[in-house]
Amino acid sequence: MVTHETWLAGLFNTYLAGLGNWLLALFGQAAENVKEPWADHVVMQILVALAIILVLALLKAGLSVEKPGGLQHFFELIHGFLDEQSHDQIGHGSRKHIVLFETLFIFLLISNILGIVPGFMSPTQVVYVPVGCALVAFLYYNIVGIQKNGLGKYLKHFVGPIPAMAPLMIPIEIISHLARPLSLTIRLFANMYAGEQVTLVFLSLTYLVIPAAFMGLHVFVGVLQAYIFVLLTMMYIAGATAEEH
Image (cartoon, one colour):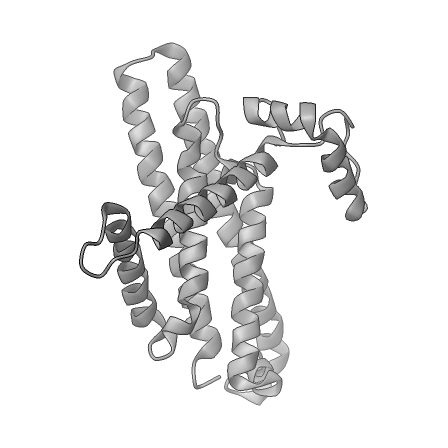
């Protein structure tokens, strides 16, 4: 579902419609309405990216060993947690992937909870965003698997442990791998879309206690889904880089 409802998307369409149409043309695409080429989820992703850049710039400027601030403590907590989780899943060499895990987690975390801010929406409730993140995870774990084991050895695990079973195992393994980005996409999209719609329904009925409770639930689901997405990515990388492959 592509919408043009947020005030920020309206500003983009008012003042940057030409840029939006030009960017679409670069990829051989065209907007249904040339006056509104900017969809909400695209604008929200730009906002999330700019927010991450700004926060990290502030973090870098205030880094201190002696007197770390609250922002530094927060990101150290995220780094320590994800580093521990990746080591548990992948083992030795997990830290070479930590940048991907932290980037995915922070991007998804902000994207998932952005919808609770009046006038904004969660870009992850539009299926294209989860698809993009899932494809990044899918391509990454296959690439690192090939780099670690070599193309021939990596493809060999599709055959299975018994060569005679190859005609059966190869299709099963291919379907299994292709199902992974689909699973990542559906899980994230369905949870965020449902959470957004439930919150909107209760906001339309009352404006006090019940919406606040569901907004809190929305934040919890957003954090949980960001973690699950990254955890599954860790597991896929662990399988792709395992020595037996």
